[in-house]
Every structure is written in structure tokens, then in C-alpha cells.
Image (cartoon, rainbow, N blue to C red; front, side):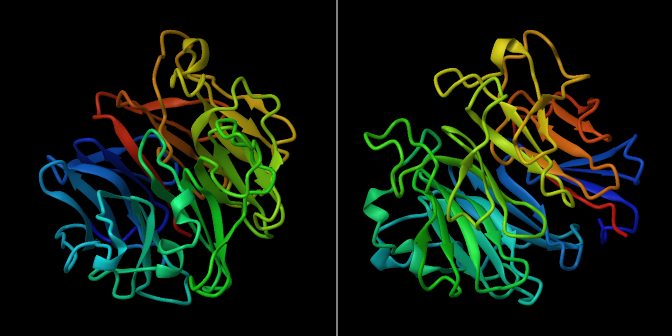
Length: 365
């Protein structure tokens, strides 16, 4: 594997039995498949550093050997961390697995972040060789109020500010969204307006079960798919607006946002927290062009019946083509994509292991 080439698209897929790499040109009609990499290991997240287009990171996990973050410059040879990703002894915690990896701001080369279970944020300053805790969050005064969801108590979304390396949003299930503007020294909950139907107080300051948090391009807008609805914030998370009206369900995990249009987003609703599968057995993506004020079913080419499957929180991504490509993978190993922003869908790959994560990169200018 080499650097992401001009005009090419690369899709990185993490599964229960390793990682897969799919490549295409800008037309995105035919795909070459490589893998599995890390055979025998679960890959909770598989991503590429867009700052150089050639450094890859994989969050690997084994029930016997534990977790690690593997990295590669070019993809032919992989290296493990030095010392692992570990809480310090005074934390009284042990990292079960790494859920999400996110390269830092363009102004801080070599900085990479990772979110783990039990919920915590870690930072590397040497491109993933060594990792240290972000103690301002990991020792937060509210930590005794954080709760595990069905998948564990996990930090799964990391949203650095593209213009200011001191600022960042993160999301924890189940605690909510937190924000720092001082490089991680202090963190404030930002959950006003999001519901927690499973709590006595339906609108608490924290305790919300965020499933996915994503930035919108430009401005100060964010989206989230929550356990209890879909939301948008135009104030950097200070206040959230419920934008679930028009969807068949408030419940879901994954979300995608257009790379240039702040009002365009995609979700794949699930029936409920009790039945985590497609409503009515129809696999359906929904698209909004107006920031969630309205939603349209965009499911041409997706299975219309007997599709009782699940799309997980990391398993949707959007490329940067002029007509954005959207990709998502299922719990039963199907990988779908659209080249026309959801107007029609195609099956890219079948018979893969259960898909945990999907990340799209390119086409490079």
C-alpha cells in the first residue's frame, strides 16, 4: 500500500475478523479489495491520517490478548504501541478496548487522539508510538455519574476544532457531549436540549447516551445521533435542537454529514433500543438537505424486506467527491454505497464479517 493517490478513493473497513481496504478511482464504479489485515483480531476502528495521506491507524482487540493501536506508514508493515494504551495506576481503571482514533489538528503534526472503554481520552504526540491520559477529562468531577450503555461506557466521538487546537468536543455513552477550549485541561458538559428518556430528569446536564457526534463544515454547527433522537447544534453544542421529526424512529447509531454542505446529513434509523434492527424489515437511509428541518427516505437499491440488521455507530462515512459518496456497513457483513448522495445505492461487498467501522478518504485533488 502506498500514499493515497490523486483522484483515488480509499475505504477502510473494520470488522470482527480484521480490517479490509477497498480502492477505486474517482468514478467509484469498481473496487479492489485487500484483506483481511490483522486476521484473528477485531478492528473497532480503522482510519487514515488526512494530514499526510499515508499513515494508517487500527484499533485492534482480542478477547485473549487485549487491545492495542497499530500504525503503519504506507500500510505494508504494522507497528504496535510502546507500552500500550493504559490508564495510570491512580485511575483505578483498566482499558478494555480502543473505540475510536482521530488525528489532531493540522497545526499539531504527530498528535493523535484515542477514545476508550471505560470512557477516557488519550493523546499521542509521536504519531501513535506512546499514549498518555488527558486527565482533565478522565478525572472529571462528574465521572461518578457516567453510566455504561449496552456496548459499555465508551468514548466514541472525537471532534477537534479545525482552526484552534485547544478546542475539542467529545461524546461518551452514556454521559453526553463535553467541550474543552484550553487543550483538555478543563471540560464542560454540553447537553442542553437533548433528551434522556431513561432518566428521571428527561433533560439532565449530563447522562445522555450519545451514539455519534459529527461536525458540520464551516461555522459552529454539530450533529448527533442520540439514543433518544437526532439533534443539531448551531452554537458549538451550547444548545441542541431536536430534528427527529420526519424519521420513522428516533433511535439509531450511525450518521454522515456532507463535507461541504452544512445542511446535508444522512442517518439509518433503527426500530428501537429494544429491537435494534431496521423498521419493518426495510433497510432505509434518510437524507436531509435543510439541516434536519425535513427528512426524505433515500433507499433506492437497498433491501425492502426481511432486512433485520443493524448499522453500528462507526459504520457510516462520506467521501469528498463533487457528488458525495456515502458508505455504510451492516452487522451481517454487507457494505453499501451511493455515488449520488443517496439517490440510489449499490452493494459493494457481501459476506464480510460483521462490520464495526467504515472510513472514506478522497478523492484527492
